[in-house]
Image (cartoon, rainbow, N blue to C red):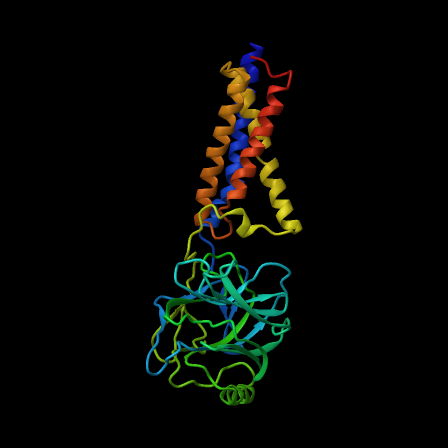
Length: 368
């Protein structure tokens, strides 16, 4: 009679633990969340919040041609960062072709500008150029990035601040990619700030042209970009409402969905991609480890008490069940914008289940 009561209590506690684990791991309301991109009221532009993204439905193409013999590129951004970042590289803008790493990223670290381009020959998979203090918090700046086969130059408010001969943003073979703003296509690099205008040119603007465009931008109130006839795409964000931003040339329409969308799903991302030495990572690790310990204890205790399994078999079955449960949660998190599917979580969850099972087999109150 005592064994039946103990089995019932263990089964009830296990079901309760499973429910809490699934609730914590999946957060059912998180599958469809609002895209935190809003139109600015006082000036043309869009503001990106914690979970925001905008992107083109079609690809922009840079190719070697008579008019652009070295696949050169100029990017012009009128923006204001509203946050200082201590870790990670939030994406202001990127070009995405479905392959990692992205061929081009314009991001922010602390209050510095970071520009990366894909380089398969590099040990990190990309090359990088940056500009210190180019994105001070709550300050509007005009960022211009001019690149060709000879290298890349960065301008802030018409002034040259950084140059690299080893970084060329567009490969000699050309590039066809979609434009993504305010986040990475994988939805794990959100940027907070206001974007007043974006222009992309097929061709490298000269220093004189960049200075002239800065003066025009300054005369317009240091927000809206001057018109750019002949640009590949220019987004002035004058619509003020709706789910789309129109390019001045009519092509490459920018979509601003009402519901946040992940463009590139990540399944069990490797530990070296997400690991950081900070308190947040340590906290996540502890939660993932400790969170599966009660499940491991209750599962093993129930197998020993209710099914009379040998202790080593109870431990093995508990670890396998914990692994499968964690795998289910991690695969479901692929479609949850606020969560990340990570291999390290799977490992820690399984280890936590094993620890809980070991505690159960050594607990004298757990009897066959």
